[in-house]
Length: 113
Length: 116
Image: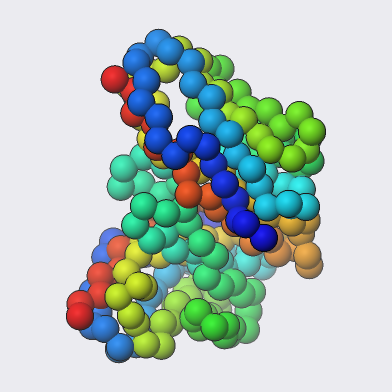
């Protein structure tokens, strides 16, 4: 799977929007962009995924650049419960996509009350 | 749906001992994954099953590591002759079959191993 680059950490205030960036300049046409997050002392949990178009779900929004070389996870109104490590992962489905996820170090999101 | 469960949640062992961890996936998920996570790092993929078949095991860290999923339901991960460097969180995940080429993995809470 292609490599992603994320900031090590970000800080935001409670009830404000948060934009978490991810660069993936070597993304291929069959790479899906997935985001997972890991709350303290828990396993990772799925947040959202997309291919080309922006996506929304109950947890977050995913904005994908037109050239697909970067994306942004948007938490519209952060709460203290959103403090976690957020991982941006590319998933190549060309060969069936049946393999483990490749996690980087992710972005440690700190939410200030 | 009770989610992915792992047992035990914590394990302390002495160097040289063997340990075995169990993972119960979400029922009817035919894919099961094992990961290892060391402090400050993201999870690292180890191995993967589709039903009872182990389709990827080249990422297992050494021949001391082995995994089974005998009936296509629960899985076990065994580490023989543990070393202090094996201290880590061991995570299990499961997923249904791919839908349109996209798969979501559901993770368990992990087993934290400490080798003294």
